[in-house]
Image (cartoon, rainbow, N blue to C red; front, top):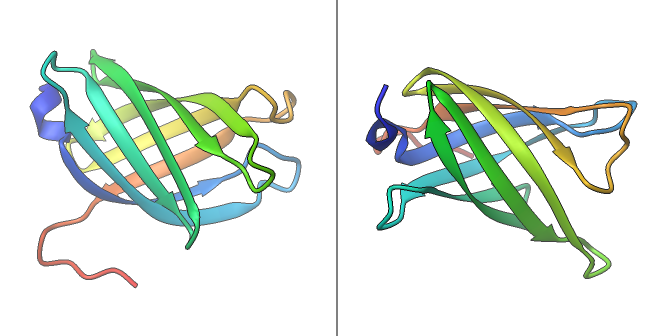
Length: 118
């Protein structure tokens, strides 16, 4: 798989890094910068935006991300995706201040231009 094949919009479902594995849904956009590094933007729920940058090798995508929490505190973490196909990414993630006993999970499914999501 080539890095250019990952560029696009994805629908995501995941679980948080907590004992209850709280679920979430959202959207992920992946693009490339001028150095062929990945940039990522997440929209989780109605009001949480996250962004990050990363790299791709041997069908593994690694993204360092950050976002501002409800208390205006900046949270940082890393997500690792195994790229099953250019349309399906299967990953796990961890935040610096998350519960170290658990990993979050995230699956991304490519959204075609003619697909409408609610």
